[in-house]
Length: 317
Image (cartoon, rainbow, N blue to C red; front, side):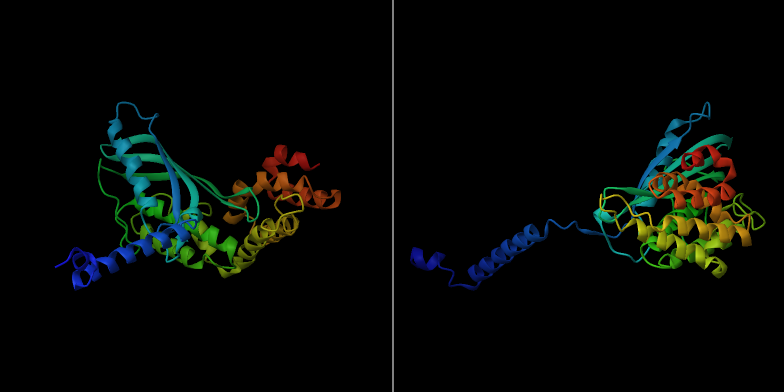
């Protein structure tokens, strides 16, 4: 066989090799061409997790280091919904677990501080979506214990509570982007709350109007559909920037009026507090830029809604 025949590719093996190389080159080229678009990710949350155990003396710190990593992996490594998000679309949030007391070996009392935010479209502005402090979390944990979770079979208060807030973050984000878009997440919260109540853990009692079960009930109650409509309108308004690139303000005052109407019907409704804890600082900042008439109207309504926040609201006078 001549040198030319040997390397000309006349045999099947040479043709297969050539085709394989050609496909690899095409795949690399395609990857380069679409590489500017971030890959899709099954995970929706990008959570920063911190466990603070400084209040507990004499405890094994390795337990808390392991707990911090376990919670981080549990939140960020799980696919919570069927949504397909790109890496740059994952929801940024934070979970800060403050251990306040070691009740016994492997049993702890704690507080959980949860925050989330999302970018406003066509802007560099970031809007807060959740800012909540849960002071009623007691749980059991052993170092390197895997955190397992099943919506239909609650195995521990820690996983139930973390999952509950993961769904709340997702539900609020989805509700801000499409009307009632977070319904399935709020339904999952309801399922978690119902199953957790049977254990008698603190924070899930039905009689409270401020705890996890109360928040769940409010988001799943059709009587509060106006609140969810307001939440959607508020964020759609932010997503339409002003000429200077600032978030839009036209929906701010109408949102305050919706809250006022809700307070008139249900004065102790947990959604009013949840909104104020998350949004009041932002609203004051945005309302400081509207005309005097709107500012006065908003100030009077907000003072009735949040009288203990009068120092912050004084900026609108």
